[in-house]
Amino acid sequence: MENPSSPAGKLISQTIAMPRETNANGDIFGGWLLSEMDLAGAILAGRIAKGRVATVAISSMSFLNPVPVGAVVGCYAHTLAIGASSMRILIEAWIDGEQQADSSKVTEGEFVFVAIDDQGNKRKVPKT
Image (cartoon, rainbow, N blue to C red; front, top):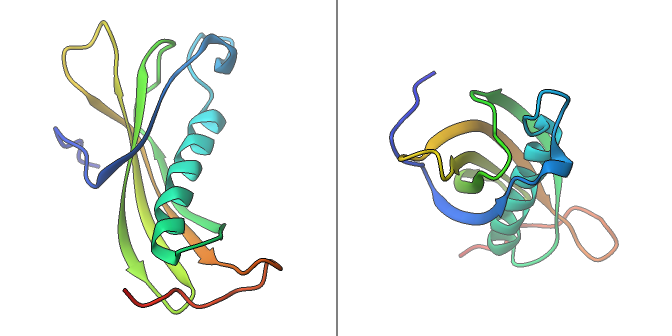
């Protein structure tokens, strides 16, 4: 898997990796990072769907490097496909830290979201 020098997609969210999110080795839990990516994907999917969305699948996920405490984690996302009610979105997580001169990609995943109505039923994604 290639590790490009810059993120693909648009910066959707940023946060700081805090000590409460670590494992016994002092690295950030993969589940916390996955959650941050899911939130970023939901933001983009919600913009595309112009409303409520739900995550229905994570069709691939690759953890490339550990995330140290204190790193700034940025989630970048871009749309791969839009169906009648679903959206496939690639999300990359990159880190910047005080000890790092450059950004580095730490994980990427392909998420599938579906547009839903107020009752939680599937609905069509509006045409743009």
